Amino acid sequence: MSGSRGGGGGNAEVIVVGGGVIGLTTAVVLAESGHRVGVWTRDPVARTTSAVAGALFWPYRIEPARLVGGWLEHSLSRYEPLARRPEETGVRLVAGLMADTPLDGPGSWSSRIPGLREARPDELPASVGQALRATVPLIDMPVHLRYLKERLRAAGGTVQRRTVTGFAEPAAEAPVVIDCTGLGARELAADASVYPVRGQVVVVENPGIDEWFVSSLPGPAGTTYVMPHPYGVLLGGTTTEHSWDLGPDPAEARDIIARCARIHPALAGARVLEHRVGLRPARPGVRLEAVQLPGGGRLVHNYGHGGAGVTVAWGCARDAARLATA
Image (cartoon, rainbow, N blue to C red; front, side, top):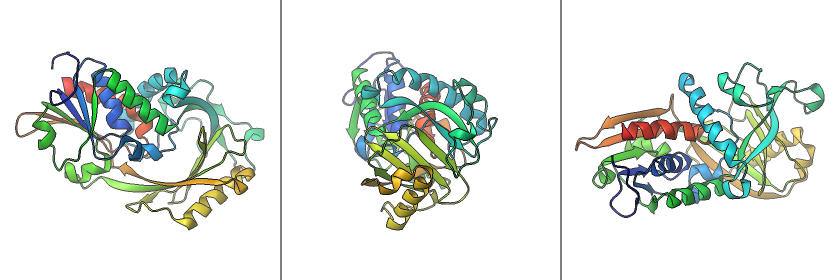
């Protein structure tokens, strides 16, 4: 592929299918390397699954473990500088507690987190017996997606609303296609191993919380998290496998608020601002590989990131870009 700029119209060298955080980050990496890139997205960027994510930098429901560490370390190295401009990028470095996790649990990537340690007993909520204390990126996804979109445009890339029924359509317009379709890969890539993990969250007015909290235990309602964002506190959550239901469940919402209020009692009376539901694109392992299309083009798959798309986005984008340009 040549290194010339200007990814507008029908002269793209690479078409990225999918406008969530994986697709946009991959497109940014390629465009800033000098390639002409177009993003085709079925949904507006602001209405993708990525837009409703709590977006704490921590791996969740993602494999294979042998690759995840490298993706995490690279992604962290990209998010940390962005945290210097939070209003523009949506990225802030925020302290918090990861409960029910031993110090050696996260893996080697956690050595990159400055100050990661066991929380002292006086730092733990009354109902929590153990937690790690860490300062990691917490990302306001609507702001971050806008930032990525503008960064892509500044590098000469384009974003189009366009629905495809197969990869032959983008392949007819560009020699390289990157599949960042998330759950859409179930149909587009004929991959039956992709399935949804439904997550419901509640956004409430912030009663004065400035740190995040996460506790993950087995079961559909085993994940409790409190994430303070500029727009309010995001409370979660649920992990219902194989559910395609995008409608908020009032009973689940009440349960989420009750669980979070056991951590921060002030949340019990906080005014509810919004209910959100997203479907995490789960798979036994991330699919990140290049295949040849029948017409001779190259298709790079980059999907199946489960609940960790934001966390590994830059690392996976780097590897997908290498596959696209090899």
